[in-house]
Length: 129
Image 1 (tube, helix red, strand yellow):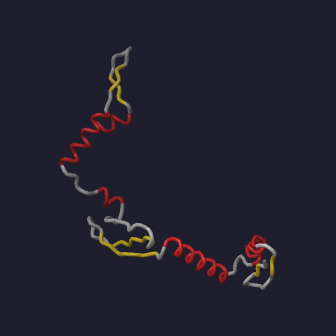
Image 2 (cartoon, rainbow, N blue to C red):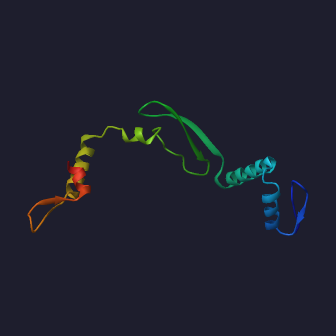
Image 3 (cartoon, rainbow, N blue to C red):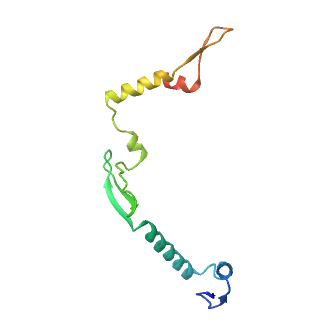
């Protein structure tokens, strides 16, 4: 099978020879790069579907942001514009109590057999104090 360069019409025996020729001879050719980008986007669209975009408003700061996902994939349920806004939501007292119980279970102290001082691991100490 013959492989023909689209830029200079040179013919190659294998695809790898053609690819190497394009890499070294037509490196700065923007026409080829545009074609390559179009081929990639068509291949991605065939596999994943069309790229969809939607503008939404953040639940906390009411800032507009865009969400992108592919047609064949699950729709993204993003409600906040950033991680900062997502972490800033108000917790209910029930959730606060659950977190408190979980953290107190983690806290463990260790007694030194020689000096009888109480030691905490650094991780648990940060949660307690």
